[in-house]
Length: 98
Image (spheres, helix red, strand yellow):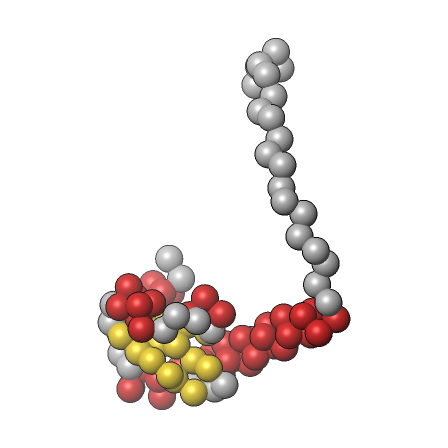
């Protein structure tokens, strides 16, 4: 690397106010529920595979609330998707992680 090259200017980040105790608790609760749903999917994968083969599922509170073979379609139908457990249910589970 050429040390004589100019360093890129640092972008200024807008400083966000710290979270309140209630907001921190809300985030912690959401993370815990996400983890519980993820474990639930792992524990019930065979059953889910029988019901939703080769489909994306969305899980909330250990319940499948939506499914679709097309992820874009699922995203359009479930606006809170980024905050929920979602998984592609496939016979070849290793393929889902690629």
